[in-house]
Image (cartoon, rainbow, N blue to C red; front, side, top):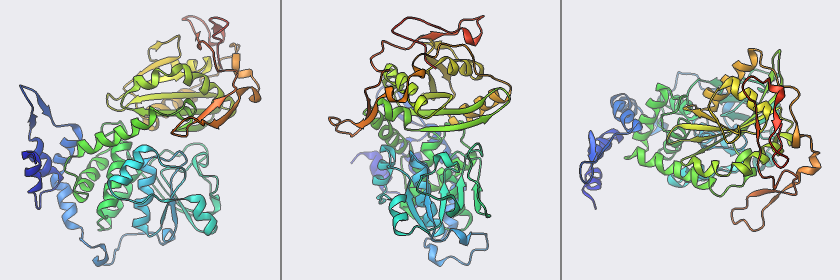
Length: 464
């Protein structure tokens, strides 16, 4: 056993911060003159050591022995089913698991878990929740609490709105927010992760989450805040990370974060263009003076964006097909490097190009099908608010552009099927008239109005 781990194994009362201090110190010395400095998440855990320690030591070891809680804990959530959004992610699943433990309910899945969530479940020995469909088959009248979302477009279709009794979320109230005919419990906070809300509620009610629950919540916060480096990160997220790391006895939080991010990226390498475009996609409705319509916005988070960008020739035609099938007026796909904290935007038509230029103004490349978004990495904070502001300020959809393949009939887009030779069971599109094109190319030259976009060649028509 290395001296490092020997030192760590001797810790008795030392928490995560002390373990980090012993392992890394001010800087870990490698061969030669190379020194690995503390990462941001390591600095935060050490910086918050006292506050986290005070909180953790104030919590009873056994939640059953706690005195009667005076703070409000809604009885309406007891025995409810806690379920996240479609295309479920780690925050959605961990939040449901944590909320079910906190309020006395049942966690459920809105859709199958991704590789990052599977990693966290296995890491902390947590059983994967059942699907919401299975639970509703057994008990159609059970109450529902939505976690990590409140829009009907992100809600599993098996859920009836009149059964929703609660919402716990950290997103803005925008279009398609659920409407109820009776008062419900709502806890929405402008924090980086929904799991931060659950962790904070545990703490404020004097309850210590079990080690496996703390571990899941910790991973979810690291995921949603991009290891506490994302623009949505708040000091509450940082404090709860330090608290949860202590309870879950995570000695090397940087290693944990790197492992789960690798798990997330590992899945992307095997995903089809259909899965990448539709995977983490959300829709937003606008009704401004100059534009009324639907905008779809997908995000792919990866540790190696080059792998995804090299597949742009597959992704752009699939974006056009998706846009047609879902009747979007615009569709974007942002590829985010979660290590370098930079992103690029895939642009599938002149309408998208016009909106992206007005909203983001980033550098264009690849015949204007890719825009450099720089350090913008968050859909919740960096993308949608900017698009919303641009549209509300009078942006109008360009007219007179060459529509190209967007005018094909739905029947000409082929069909989706599970690839029979793919060991991962990915969905692929077959029989589409958009497949086999040499590329997609268009331009909005300086000095031209948006409606003057032209096709670059016959084999590469403009697309809108």
